[in-house]
Image (cartoon, rainbow over all chains, first blue to last red; front, top):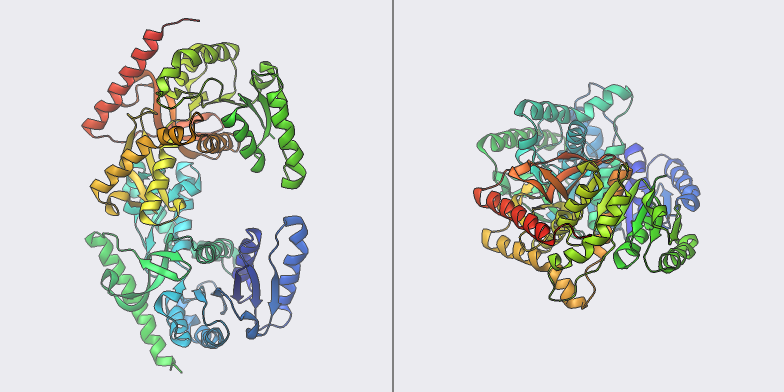
Length: 312
Length: 307
């Protein structure tokens, strides 16, 4: 049985564990700094196992050493975004948490693929890459798959079709500067642009852009975790099962799409080695421009990171 | 929970019941003209139920009326192809069986999934003879061809088939029309990822893959693919999912065709065909689609109204 460790036993981490267990994907270790929290959630999951018929083991721990031998480590730990709070406000605290986790991963799970979920995503992924010293392909951020699943749902709702029949590509940084690509969005193979007017598409794009915020607005306290948890589980499954799945994810770029030395949302091929390939699709001038803006935004974050961060 | 009737308990019929049970889609009544066959297969499946955790009931019956009185009726009855046979060679023989089923179902509100071959002709015949709304009758044509193309594209690119959407329309025969423009990989048009010549080879392979299975298996037509597709269609109707499938349907003016059945993509829900999605074709594809329709009509007319 494969082994997946999830750092951070909050809502996103625990919901990812739920989906991973329900599909019997791998044994799971939940790690959190809060004493009793990961243990309680792991035990609660195991109590449901006879009814839900999953046969994976789930362990809760406060000790990083228990992630030893993991095939995949998911990093969700960080303080959550509050309503109205900018992602960059989270930076200092979450960078510190990522540093500790990255060092632990390097020590105990040196062969793992790391899926970064904590925000600000593209900057935390950079921190993780530096702290683990892993090959570039073994650190990947979860963002585009979540943005695209939201876009897919909004399209399906509008057209009254099955959500999984809608394919969509969303590039760029995770946040207001994401770049949804309607041209690379299809419904049962039909280009979206044949099914909806430019205006209708623009409305759905805008809703997608603010998708996370819409949930935060309803919840008042806390942010989305079902769709993020499902997105994490999908990426974990792609790696554990070596699926060779194309998905939008935050990957470290070296010249692709004209950008270097940043994590940015692009289409990648996910398999057992992590990001096995970065796909370069043709972009129009406008699309490239939007991606450049998104990259500039991420670069600002990295510059801020440099000011507060010194690698080991 | 809905009830599904399956006419014919051969490889396709029984495997469809099996897939339906494994996915807990609905209760099933199996029928076959050979007495006892459906009861035997149903019993065999139900004896596996405790181990496999089925919530559904599979039963066999030797009475056709038991099968027709269901929410969804899957028609697999009739002869299958032997190696070297074309699908249309089966028409006059299978038409007799389908005509009598259609006559017994006049006025029915059931949704009918036609699997028997030649599927396009039998779908048209069924609509004509039953007088049912054309949206209630869906033939397994393009969905199979699309699935095969989808598999080949995924293999070619080394990606999971779940990433691929492929569209094949027209006749369920060598005259099928694969549509590159309506085939995507994770939303990206397949033409951007596979060069034109290689794509054409994959299209040819798709065209030939039904025949390939008949040849390799000797005597048995393919049945896992058709059974899986029939199950997915039944699920889409039963759960009203709005899933998109390329199904054979009686055409009433779509792409210039009237009175013949061929495959076009459609949104499938509780009423059967909820919405037809008409692709934009090149002139060549359009004329191929229309000449296929004329051929289908001609074969059906020459077989006549013999009962």
